[in-house]
Length: 626
View (cartoon, rainbow, N blue to C red):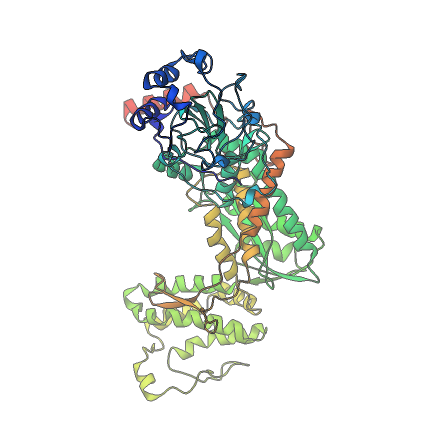
């Protein structure tokens, strides 16, 4: 992509030409040629002002037009001037600033690519998608081109002399179209040279298209990037332009990329698969509008499918998770994937659904969610004054759940007996006869010092009784049997953390926006799962970082992994550019493509009243005060 340079000139300068500033500079420098040529000596400062101040074309309306010499074709400056920054007269006829001059003295300037861009500093237009720019540019590798931020003052330093003949510039104007800057330069010899800061793609400034795509591809939002641009006084696209480009070009590319990736992934599955599933709401609390359910292959840790459901499609928010899982299982079966085992949290509706409607699939519970639920109950018990002795054991009991599930070898009875053994261990009893398979603790013999320092719980004490009520809970003992395969959805929790980058819970998105952003998150996860741990420069040691999680309240080590790869985004950006080239027509008042017919346009429970009625109700409420 041609260098998209951005200037920092003030927005208050829009619609203000820059000629006067250049006039002052020209007068101060007194025609700053390295050496004076014959043509220059024919002008004095009054003549220059007459040329610059003329209201018409400087080539025809100047008082000096009658004695204007032939254009300067050779100049000491011409060879050293960076002419690659300018487009030639052949391209000028399509630029929006002015018509190509028909003066007989006009020379042909080479049609050379240009790529510098600034902020709005002069005559500015709306950032309409169509810039009416038909300059010839090679867009085949536009997504690989570099871009820069350049200040307007730095651009001025390049524009002292005409790139065609080397004569001083008599007028200089700017026109901004979103992120595109078009510069119109007229020299003392009457050459009218125009330059654009970026190429066009079927009439649309390339920067407008790629900026809109990059915002979404990176998981950003228009409001944040627009604020960023305002602080820098950076010429930027409008919100309406962003949404039109997003809906017309970016959404289709994301959708096609995800579907192609998913089809390839599902077709590569051989034999029955074990999957992990978990849901996520789009907002905190119990008032979610959208729910997303994701299923991941336990072996490859790649996302096989996700389903997005709007709350208006079901009875209430809690019912979304069951509907999402139903759709995901149908998607997998229709794609020829056989599901052998599914691990989820202990959602009651899903448990009932799997038992009644999908008995052929072995349903397991996630160890992490199970341990979290037990820990929460133990902490609540430990906050009671008489049960505070239980708190030092909470983390050990959570660890015991993980150990029991991992070491039971798939035997649910052994798992249950190992879980119940915690009641003996906390009382300093390490062997017993009230079991069939597990009759003693497997930890090493405790030293006398260890036995003296452990905060043992006396059988029958309030703390031990509270622990017993949790361990022997009827539902808990029934559910723990579904931990025997030692399945945990930690990878899904990691993915949900990544999903907040693309779908933050404090930001509202449309149905299509939520769908596209979730597809981007799934692509990000699948392209970067299984990364190797980062190593030192010598390559012989793994790298770690030390953190202090608030929940654990202790320093822990976390491995550092290799940097993520986002090469697939380059392909998607190229696809967006190609889609624009093949579908150049964009509707000026384009409305976003509606979501599926099963999804309501909003989640309101009543018909929308007239706007005036609602405003009138609000005004009365303000007057009354309640």
